[in-house]
Length: 305
Image 1 (cartoon, rainbow, N blue to C red):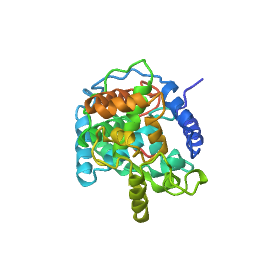
Image 2 (tube, rainbow, N blue to C red):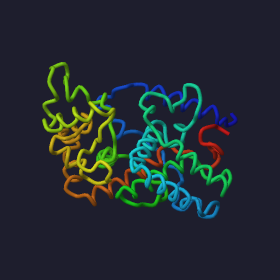
Image 3 (tube, rainbow, N blue to C red):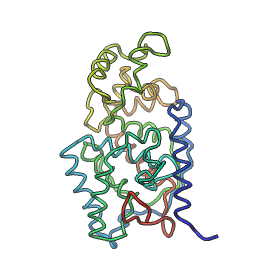
């Protein structure tokens, strides 16, 4: 049977949209997604474009740095984009496609942003090295560079691995919420009428309840790390241990028996958290990727060739 890349993309996009249309996920389901989600690692290697487009990573880094200088929340935006693209059927940049009923507009993807930044990076790369650097790699590299600019770890993307996600990886990835923003509608019940009781969630620090109420009166969203919202660090985990997790799924990390010990370790050791985050990001960036003759190198990230 001949290979039809468009058919494969269309099939993946449809299944991704169906998956993302579910508005809420039970915590146990989230753990299953992180812990036993099958990972197919391809033959990736550091410096893949060293000969075909030696300036590729520099171009990405410079444009991300420029954007970060204007809006430091770009780190949270790119992390969200990377996660949403990778954790459903793999890192294939299908999230970038503009089309009717596209993955881009499905469910929670409506809040993903910074597509224009990806377009600018792609335009410069096409000018320097036509049809060489994939859109999926652009997202991966841009996310890595934005994390470093926010004070997080700087790392290389090494040769593909063959091991899967574990609890340390899962909790580390949720640690990206240290620079995240949450829509007030996603946690409004926790600060007003938790499970129909007419009262706030008793597991949330009362001072945080009051602070979030004030924030949400004037804004549609709030920082998920109320301590250092623009700094990539382990304060997010320290806040969880003080009952100051904004999202319920985050706060449960500090109480669930499978994850509370990991939260404690990350809260007590910023360097350890950053090392584990790098490991988890590298694994996630290799989830079900297309390499070799599979897929294509898009000229425009918003359209199939």
